[in-house]
Length: 441
Image (cartoon, rainbow, N blue to C red; front, top):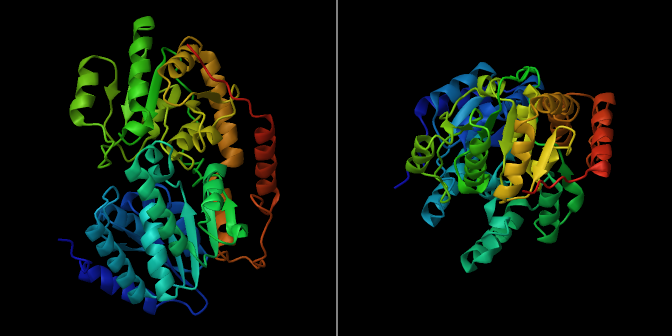
């Protein structure tokens, strides 16, 4: 049975001490995640921005990871452990999660809550609303499998979506702002009436990427080296990647096909036995999981993500773009936002091994072209996906910026300043000229 009071005593005392030292004009912010390591992998720069603006920040996640605690402490953010089973549909566990979040909110009394991913949004949003948290800001990094076409094919899936819609409406009622990463999620929010005032929906280009940390690295030119980075679940397109690799290996025996990523508790997870089988056949090299993907990106020349999962904007693709790699991904919301077809990569048909094989084959024999596409990826990452640009927009929309600016709404997807305007203009141009190249065998 889950113990909803399982927060370490020293953590509680540190949080109390932090709150007691809070400056008068600062605000207490609770950032709520469903995976603790995502706080340092994906949100570290945003958390730094909050601290630099003079706010008191508490970040919460389900895994009590000492490294996450230490990394957050270095930037002045306290960590709180909130039990949460990401892939579980157990009502008992979800109720326990909700009660623990509610208890944490009552203890720290945040002025602002920023939950991201489905369960934190649902249970954190409801708990914050009931507790009267005045400023509730939601990062919809992707609505998830519940809203996918595959889920709606079953009666159980349709029931889960109806329940989720009801919970989303309850959780996000009265929100200050709802951020989305792609137009598909924006439309689903509107069509399912998840919020009443659609003017508070604002699209941003994902979580962004630190283009200094993920510095450009020249692509190797000796042989084709493909890399896929993803959680090991079926919906990420792992089976399609392996099948395309199997075919291409027959044509180009020297080609390497690498797979990097953690195993996952998701019901659609791929087993260790399956991975070992593919490795034993000599099709792929499984690289395990890593805290730093940069060395692996530096050793590949083509990045592949054939996902048909309901992505926001995949961070793995943004990191590959920043390092300067050609991108092959699917023509689906989120994934397609990372590619201007024929300019920095190719879009392929979801679930199509033939389409994926043709795109991979086209670059396997043209590594110079792959290198040129990679350079354009780097340019696009710097102009549109720089984390500093993204965080400035987020901070302003949430009313957390320390600049003397009014809190008036900006035009959808727009932002202030010459750099932001340049990025916005580029996105408009890309959207206007987007041409989908569907590679067919």
